[in-house]
Length: 339
Ligand code: 1HN
Image (tube, rainbow, N blue to C red):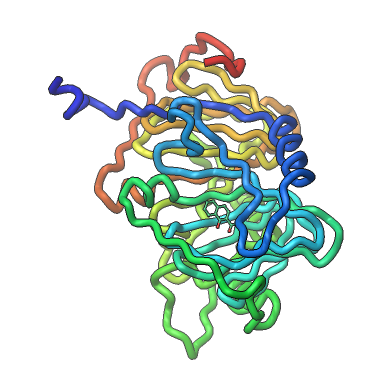
């Protein structure tokens, strides 16, 4: 009984899980054909539902992760919500998001921010469909009973700034327009362009330093204050060099990974999860995990979101390395998709 109230350590209901790209893509494409976006309607988003969470469309206890499909020439109308949101672009040519009047064109690998209560809509200027992942703090917002949601009266916002203005103004990271004060709340830039992210990863490669648990990993931060991009969750991009096998650790924060490029595997609590481009992987809180890029010559690049900023803000974050077996888990099975 006492252990129900004061467990000795975290007991996540979310289970480690892997969603394969082929299956997700087929479902999203089918939704693209079958489901119309209506005026004042919502988004065509497939929520990743962790099998440990009783049918809730949540990837972990704290993170919502979905795959969104936008058809060519389509408009996903403006709305706003208190939930903190972000997107990582998988495929887009000619699609845009307008966040609070600031329209940005989306390209593969871009990381897009949507701080709370900012109006946002998406659209496309040609016939190409776009696909991206949405990461939001919906489970936390709902748990706290703090959700607010509002639809806009227009079917798309007026564009009030120059196209891509926030990238032009703030996208270089180290500089601030002298006539503005630092923005302390959320990052001033609304999209971290893939070109810059790749440059940063390549710089880190040259610097020849690495993390034993993640190899080369960078968090997307607010360039004005160094904080995480959102308050309830953060996002990172990670490059695992060929043949690198990281050491295992565990922490009080859950992660959802999207495999942007490459192939390899992760071992989570003794189970091996083989991944390749496009797959999604969940690492629940306090689960031991290590990663391996199995390629001899190609980098593996992984995008991930984590609720660590929330845990740290509440003073709940802990991290510990696996001490035994030179920091490597003993693999007792391979994930097959069966519970
Ligand atoms: C949302 O606003 C979007 O704007 C996507 O693209 C997914 C899931 C739950 C709640 C709001 C979007 C969402 C969402």
